[in-house]
Every structure is written in C-alpha cells, then in structure tokens.
Image (cartoon, rainbow, N blue to C red; front, side, top):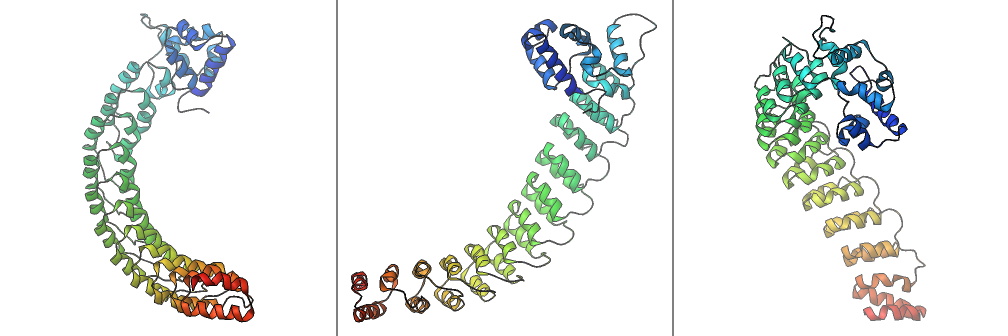
Length: 418
C-alpha cells in the first residue's frame, strides 16, 4: 500500500531483504558493504527507515538490482532528487531546480534531515498537512517553530496532530499560543501529551457544552479539582448508566451532586452497577426511583450494598415467582421476617437438598412449613440432612412416626439428634 510519500516503504523493505537473501548475504555483510551498522540494515528491512539517498545507487549495485526494482518505480520527483544528489557540490548551470515543499513530501524518507529543516525554515507559511507529512523527519525544535507559521495559527487540533513528535517544553510553549476555542473533545485528544498544569490551563478555555460522556473520556487525565469544575458545566441529562462510567473518577460529593440530576428510570440492574461507588444514603435515594420489576435474582446482586430497610422495601416490589434456590442465594442478606414473607411466595417443588441449603437461615416454623411441601413418600432416612436444623418437637414427632411404621433405619438415623 502506498503511503503519504511517493513510494511504498514496505515494498522497498521487502525488496532489500529478498535481494540480500538472493545474494546469500547476512545483514552484517550488507552493512559492511554499505558502511553502515547492521541495525541500520535491520531497520531498512523492517520498513522503519529508508537508506540515505546518497547510498541508493551503491545499494542497488551491491544487491544487483535496479533503482526501479528497489523503489517499485521512480517518479519524476525521485529522479530529480537522485540527480541533485549525484551532482552535489558541482558548480553547474544545469543542476535540477530546488524541490518544492510538495515535492519534498513525496521523498521525505530519503532526504537528509538538514535539507528538510532548511526548506521548511525558509517557508513563510505552511499548512498542517505539510507539517504532518514532514513531522517524523524534522527536529522537534524546528517543528515547534513551524507550528507558529501555520496558516490560521496554532489550534488544539494542529497541536494534537504533531504532539507525538514534539518535546514537553515545545508543547508547553505552544499551548500559550493557541488561537480559538477549546472543546472538551479536542482537549481529550491532546491530553495524553500534557501534564496536569497544562490540562488545567486549557480547561479554563473550554467553550461549548460539556456532557457526562465527554467528561468520562477526559477524566483519566484530570485531577480531582478539574473534574469538579467540569461537572458544574455539564449540559443535558445524566443517566445512571453514564454516571456509572464516570463514577470511578469522582469523589463522594460529586457523585451525590450528579445523582440529583439523573434523568430517566433506574433499574435494579443499573443501580447494582453503580452501587460500589455510592454511600447508603445515595443508594436509598435511588431505590425510590426504581421503575420496572424487581426479581429475587436482581435483588440478590444488589443486596450486598443495601441496608436492611432498603432490602425490605425492595422485597415488596418483587415480581414473579420465588424459587427456594433463588431465596437461598438471597437469604444471607435477609432478616427472619423477610425470609418468612418470601417463603409464602415460593413456587415449584421443594427438595430435601434445597431445603437443607436454606435451613441455616430459617426459624423452626419456616422449616416445618417447608417440610410439608416435600413429596409425601419421602422416607425418614432421606430427611437426615435436615435433622441438625429441626427442633425437639419436630424430631420427636418424626421419631414416633418411624416407630409406629416400624422404620428401624429411620429410628437409627434420628436417635442421635434427640
């Protein structure tokens, strides 16, 4: 694939490697022939850099290929550069003319940096496309100077495009020269290259609205005070989902303030996602906004974050059936009265295994009531896992029944618990 320049650097990289292998040469041997380090050859073959223009002819000779084969074709601009390189130092009226900046863009990877720096420094003005093309090949100080020559001045957008190629001091100096407004979106793109003080300074220049979504994208780069200042500028509604995304970056007071701005409904599921960042009072206030159904399963997920009164109020909103298995998962968070009320809603069968699992959380009357839902043919021996949770009256009743039936095995099982 062609890049922004006049040739395909990846093609040239593969051609150098293939031609070297065809000559049965190592990278070290090619480096010796060319008078460069083997790291330079390695970078050529990975496409990380291009051979200096003054070495292209020699490289073609060593690899026994043509310049057209090496570069995948030779454009008029490349031909001009080659001719100028070969006549370098000659005093002649027929030297090729100096290249335009546009032409230099085409062959930047093979031009000496000093030639690029000189051409750009001499330009009265440049546009951002030219600077972006040359940025990987220009000294950072020169690049910073050129930014000030941009048509239209320095903007956040132009500085962001070139920031990867600038040093910290250059970026800091250019920040003071930014023309025009700063949006939170443009600041987010530039933020990875800025320190805390620089970001704080640009926040003061933000014009236009701030949404909770745009603040969430910028938040990882902000200090607490900056986030607090931007929260005050939030336009539009706040949903519980958007607040959940931003919550890891907020302090308790900021979360509390945004909770008051929440638009739209709150579901048990969305509250569960936000709950780890909330205090008890905030959770309680959001519970009052819950619309939609509450199931035992959704309440179980939220329960670890709730106080007893909140759980009790949500139990009253439970829709649909309750199984003994779902109640068992929720039971560790419930008081006796809540468990008793939910037992009355149990649908489906009760097995000894499920009753044994929930028994540690039940009072005697609840266990006895659930035992009545067991299949009538249940043998006393099968009830053995429940014996540790049964009261004396129930155990004696079961023992008498076993004796009456002549159930010797059942009597042996229950006797140790009486």
